[in-house]
Length: 506
Ligand SMILES: Cc1cc2nc3c(=O)[nH]c(=O)nc-3n(C[C@H](O)[C@H](O)[C@H](O)COP(=O)(O)OP(=O)(O)OC[C@H]3O[C@@H](n4cnc5c(N)ncnc54)[C@H](O)[C@@H]3O)c2cc1C
Image (cartoon, rainbow, N blue to C red; front, side):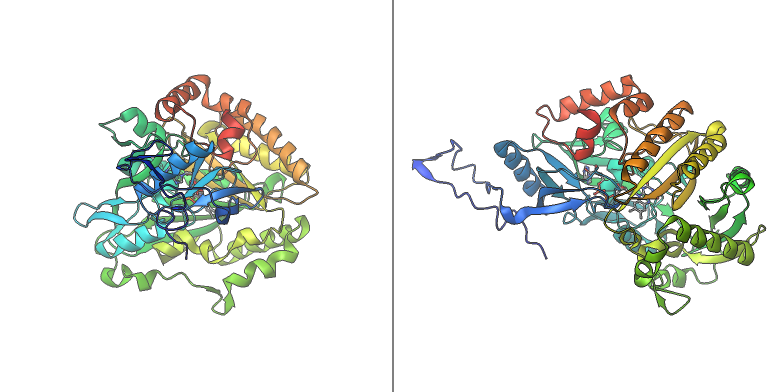
């Protein structure tokens, strides 16, 4: 349990009385705010979820806005910068601020207001998606956008403008944020919405924490009439088949996601498995009160009823090489082909199972000391099939097939630094070892060129390998200039930074 930094260690510099009501540092005694100081106990190693690159920071976990303000003052006094962190589920360096101050928002985690009639909720930034859905489900609501893990915070999700398996239909999380408070490094709080401070509203959402710190967010939840989803699972023989299925079902689905086996080529290139889900309409669930209870959403901690999922990474480790993983993927595909077939299998499944089944498996531990990187490319609809085919073939040619590919459909959105577009994304996980790191980076550069040529985009939540010129090319000079101008307005002294910002924008 970490203590409140505003109450303990950081109150180390006690005001010194010198001449009546002034202190040595010139502050008035009336200005009796606690003064924080850097302390060696705060130095911690930090990495992204992919564990492919670590750094060391002064890590603070304030519980209050005043605590946050104190950290800005500390940064100014110490000549350091401040970066924000939710629960560190970004894959790369977006939530790291090496050699500087890193502020974890995980303790600012109160629900500030909830209206079960309108479904509007106001939360502090450190509330996780897990806490959010568990809080609202019993009243018949579900977050309109959830990610593949429920461990992220709402602040971190807003900063990256995360998307779910319904991105083509519901857009990113920002489309459901009604308002937020943003704490600027000056200590001022700016309230932003579609009506007030519009430019900041559309830039701070997706602004990867560079304009200030979200201190509260107001969101609209989605009404649900059951704790269950109606799911279809089916195998698809190649990428064109998978994408054709997506296109056929855009109108009659609520969620669509595809897993791709990245190993086979030619006519099997892009074979995989689709999960499609729809909400149950009112009256379809005979026991909605029962299925909406948290007990009915418990994610199983075992596989096949006996094998603990926690053990899976250790069990799978011998397979984490191209040959072993090719066999695992082939087995997964064949199981889907046999059990679900090309026509598919239908069943009902609790929301939490459908979205967060992988949370029970710490699969970022499988990869060993080199960790993994994820490369997620967003490609316009018309170019998506050809581009993803090219990317998968290129990986095979390089002897670096990715170990997990996930296909999603997206729509454009109005946020300044968006990754969204009318098209598809393919997220691909690469295992990093001491021997292949340089080759994976080279491969990523070749893939960047293919993505850019297709008019594609990238996503800072996943990125570890982009270069400034690639970001310039996909965002465009105008967008970057607008963002830099807002950054200058909100943070004129450049107090807020992360490793990702320094890598790509300075
Ligand atoms: C297993 C897994 C599955 C995932 N699935 C998806 C998915 O389906 N869709 C998707 O879009 N993403 C997905 N992600 C990525 C993840 O959702 C994003 O990286 C998200 O931003 C992580 O939230 P976090 O709370 O961990 O934030 P962090 O990773 O800690 O921080 C993310 C960014 O937010 C900033 N930040 C954090 N808190 C604040 C704040 N209060 N104010 C301002 N800035 C802040 C940080 O500086 C950083 O730039 C997945 C990640 C994992 C590990």
